[in-house]
View: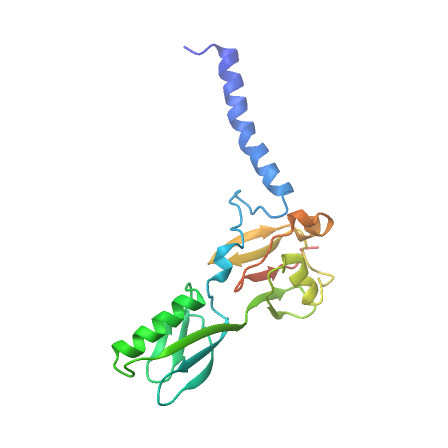
Length: 201
C-alpha cells in the first residue's frame, strides 16, 4: 500500500508535468499547441506540391513541345494526349519518368525524352495582413518573412497565434516571439498556408 504522503507526491507530480510541458510549448515560437513539432523543410522541399508551376519538355518525338503547367488542388497536372496525371509528392525526376511511362504505355509515343523543371513555387498568406495572397517561395523563407512580404500585420492581427497549415495539419506559431528570436521562426515549405487571425481586442 502506498503511504499517504508518497501518494500525494505522485498525484501532484502527475498533475504538474503536463502543465510544465504545455508551458514549454507555448514559449517555443515554432511549437504548435499539443507539442507536435513542425516537420522541417529538408528533403521534403524537393517534392512537388499543389500550386507549383512547372515546365514539362517533350523531346525526341514528331511533335516536340514545351508545356507550362501548374499542379492543381488535387495534385494533378494535365498534358496533351494523356490528360490528368498525379504530380504532387513526386520529385521533378520522378514526375518526368511517370510522364514518359504514361506516354509509352498509352502508345502515344514509342519513345520520348521528358524533362521537368520547377519555374515557381508559392506559399499563401491570408487573414490580417496588408496584402493577402500568394508569395513566391525561396529556401530561406520563414513565417515572419512571408508576413513581411505580404505587407506586414494589420492593426487587428493576433501576432501570437498565427496558423501555419502544412499537409492538412495546422500549427500555432507565435510570430511576435519569433520576430525577437529568429531561431524560433519556422522555415516554410512550398504549398504552406499562413492564416493570421483577428485579435478579440
